[in-house]
Length: 514
Image (cartoon, rainbow, N blue to C red; front, side, top):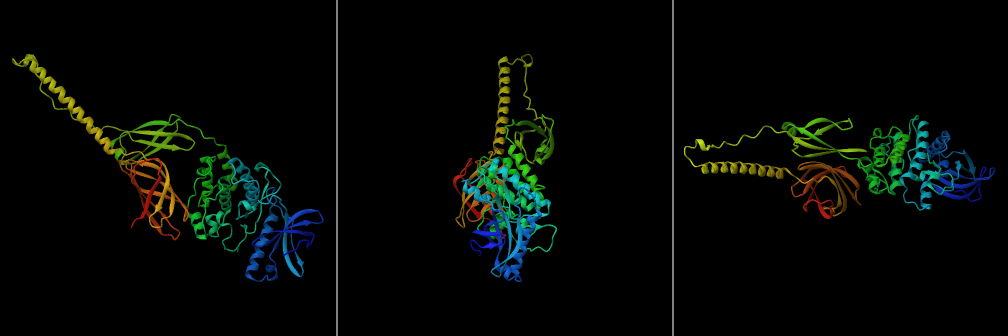
């Protein structure tokens, strides 16, 4: 370790600053220019024993960082003042010199200014600078691979986010896409690593994924993936969908949720084509202001065959827009189909099933006029007419009652919506928060998703399968997913307390299916 007051070429050590994986960081004064700088010194043992495998790895990373910074000349990237070697007390050293940022990192700046999270507008300043710097590095063929708040330094003093000048640093594990023979060791910060980076196959979109996690953290004050170890974090990055940030911070619009979820896609090909495109999509989502649209009501007439077997139609909206509609099998007269459309009016369709044929006529009742009654009293003819009217009226009442019975028999309560509450696993007794999203119902059957949050497995999202509801509102469904060991789990949840908009404190029992 260098001592206070010790000289390293033109630099005088002021104090020890921090220690890193590759070496030590010191605050120093550049004597000839009278300015303060940061000196990163590689670990002495790596230079002293350069032939060991660990030493070669450290020297390679140190040189790679210096080479990466030297290749980048951008206002939002921390520059490299000097890179070289020296001998101190017969011990060889390798070091690099960079500007001293008094405000330290973005994480330090937020802590100093008492900010647990930032507003969506404040985050826009940060994502724009970060994306421009990363895009420039990508254009030079460099992937950073360690994007996180602590690796963005605040270059100059600033009292608010709009005045921040952020510059990424720590290119020690950066990958040069034009080179080969790079170690396949998984490197990076586990909470920010894209699935392909865990498999030592990073691409430019890996930095976009990490930046999206950083934005999620800045907006909500928490990471989208939280695990207690390597295996749990890997499983969440690979398989789990995080909670929408708008459910944590109500100032976030669903349009920002959509942007972040695309940047956090498990497959890098499903993310934005570039990190700068991600930043632009965020800005557009930020400028979007939700508008209350009047729903569009339409009637769709189907034949009995179409109602029973399902069909596909194209409807013309009042605006002239053509809307494809898929009608599932088993629809019935009067059923309502809703088609939500982001940022556009919802379409509500009432099903009309055409009649097959007219009902058979009622049997005719003989009627005799007074002139042909052959001496029978006119009062008797009046009685016959009254009986005919009563018979017809009774038949109509019977038809109406049968229709009401058929309707009630086929009617199930509408349970579409969002339900939140808690449950307890019968095996482990672990308390778990559950949110149900029922988004499609066809009479007795329904579909949707569920999200569970507990201290043991973190946040997990499952698909609701085999969902049914009875006429009293009791629901039953199956969720499927995988645990950390890869074992398929199938659980059935039954609520026996009738339909309500909140699960509240209802204790649900989750039991494995044999």
